[in-house]
Amino acid sequence: MKKFKKLVVLSLVLLLFVAAGCSNQSNAGGEGSGEAKKEKIKIGMSFQEMNNPYFISMKEAFEEAAAQIGAETVIADAQHDVTKQINDIDDMIQKKIDILLINPTDSDGVEGAVEAAKKAGIIVVAIDAQAKGPIDSFVGSRNYDAGYLAGKQMAEDLGGQGKVAILDGIPVVPILERVRGFEDAVKEYSGIEIVDKQNGKQDRAEAMKVTENMLQANKDLNAIFSVNDEGALGTLGAVEASGKDVWIYSVDGHPEAIEAITKGGVFKATTAQFPRDQVRIGLGMALAKLWGAEVVPTEVPIDVELQTKENAADFSW
Image (cartoon, rainbow, N blue to C red; front, side, top):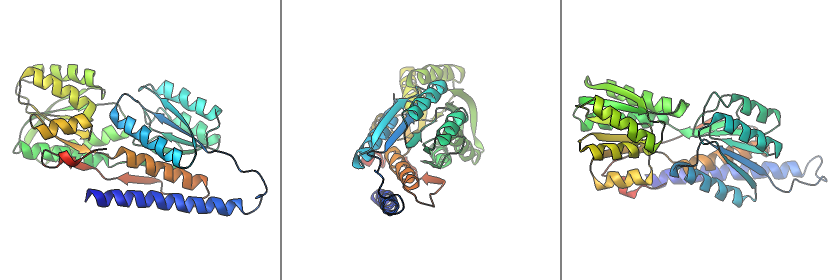
């Protein structure tokens, strides 16, 4: 099933590249064909952070895809600072990029930067997290499903009874949707009670400190849902240090999370995303638009897949 999904994704990207390339050739042969063509496409990608294997895998996929079409790249790390991200995008605009792939650190806060990019004639595609403003397309995971699947697995593992907590994150749409999905899943079990909800900022060290506080405040806690694996790994450290049997559920498919799940123990499941596919399809959308395609999907949701001890060993980004 996993191989089938990959083939579908790759076929879609290939179709976009071929269609866009044909459109580009058609335009080149029409009016103004005697003019010199631009030597290289310049593509900028602004990440919310780079201190995470999830985003590193995105960066690798972006560089590989850009190299295949001979494009020049400009990459920036916002370090979870929306002001820095706005400044980074302004710098990309000054460098006259043709395409901006934006992974926003704040969905609302980047609106002005998106508007500035569009005003400069740049194709803008949001990746992984939705961005407010006149974007051309958005490619991201089914984040509600990710939270729902994790919550459902947690509730079933607990036999429909228990006290649980949520390790929240930054206020971008994917995180909000994961929490909403998780909460909806556990609402289906009257014996499950959410007793705590705190912000671990999707950071391992911060999540460890927050989890320590959760464990102190809730002596009979049974499980924790983290909005991402980086935070969940901090939770894992805190739980193991405490010696308590508090089970962990998360979202992403981080290599260390997969390893912890396959070993058994308190880390029970993560809902895996496919970051490389998001970038490839997002770039395909942008190129199609740049090269004259009249119809480009405004949103492309990417399926997620629950990983447990039974199937996690075969998974990788």
